[in-house]
Length: 486
Image (cartoon, rainbow, N blue to C red; front, side, top):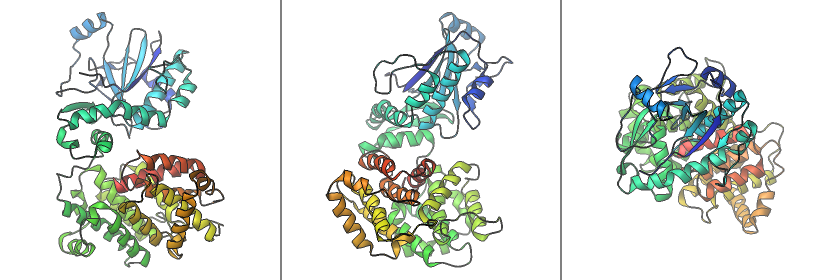
């Protein structure tokens, strides 16, 4: 079987490092959990597997008996275990032996996997007074040992995205062509079968495969499409009625979602609204949405409905009806334990709907907002139906646009884009106070296809460089709208 481990970092050390010391030095910022490791009172856990399987044709775990462990030790091998944090798809394979600690990133890994591996490797190097030996340089060339600080700087998120795709695409294609694999993950053994990928476009198979491993993939076989659409609508209806009235902004937001979200656009909006009244007894029905992807989508849609009528504000006193609604939605959708995701949605909604402070949104500023959206939509040379629907929806729901002649704004933006991309990008300066909003709008347009790869993703990166939004807000917008259109 072809090796599928995506990447590894090794640190030569003769010191008997303590795992608690290593985790403390890594300063990950959240609890690091272990799988396949047992504690025996020693500072280093006892790995329970001879080797963490990257991919396998059958789900088999090998326990390390004392006899097997002694045999492996004579061969210079040692047990491995997985270290992982929230957002990890595969975890980091940690093994020790032969005078080195190795941190391996398996195939179909997420950014969180790569980030954890670099932090652990850098921490091990600092504790050992050593450098880190990467498998190769970010560009694929041979690499000398690098310092801990250089490691974290060079092997960043962009490297993680590129390396994961490079090392995992062949496997996704192999699955689509007929082979079944099992992956050892923090969630246990995950099966990836041909029927999971066969109907996905070739350019989306890697993302689909990783989403399944991560647990973020929608199992569309598990719920009837119409029932799925009805439950998403129910979440929005509950949000719209949280304060006892339906504001114009909320009605417009509902209309926009019916037009842009593919699960909803497949059915007449009136039929879905009637079905909610007739078929959904209460908020507990949202528990039928069993996949993380569906639950997050429902939460984003409902949160936007509330935020659109509150100037982007999803906070307030605990007894505020809208705050109670957000809390109830998170509970019904099983997201109360995923506070980082909820916080990202709140920040993205604020960026999209909150009015700017001390900024006059004149025609010139509105033109820049429209230009960023058009550049994102036309990155591949054409504005398709879904992108056009999102442009129209944003024009109706974003305060800075809905009172203007957006047809003229978009026409002017297209004309400016046709005069030259670089000049158009330079026009995106002068947005003092509106950088976050501008990028959030562009991110939604770019992510309507449900993937960060391709021309739209590349353009979004360029827009981020020129618009210069707050980095945290940019990541919140990307993750929120990726969840909305996944």
